[in-house]
Length: 128
Image: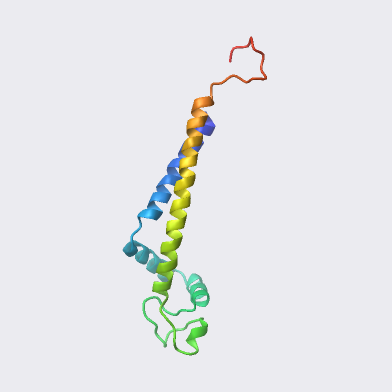
């Protein structure tokens, strides 16, 4: 019974997170990315290095940037690149989470269905 309850709670959390990932629109994704960009410096430098971009919405040659394109002053802003990746990742994560949440609800149903069965190795005259 405890396993069934824990699996049900896990289903609720995973289903709600999956729905939230799939329900985010472009404006909400952009807002979340901008908040993350403004609140952390270490992630900003990693993003600039890995995606080869500088700045969030506009490229400013007076700011410091750790990207390779900064030397040639031909950098793109990071927001469009990040929005493309984040949209793709949110769809994948939401879809996979939704798939596994439905397998969990199947597990809850099977646990409920077979929880009162007798153990076949037990004594047949014993009442469970």
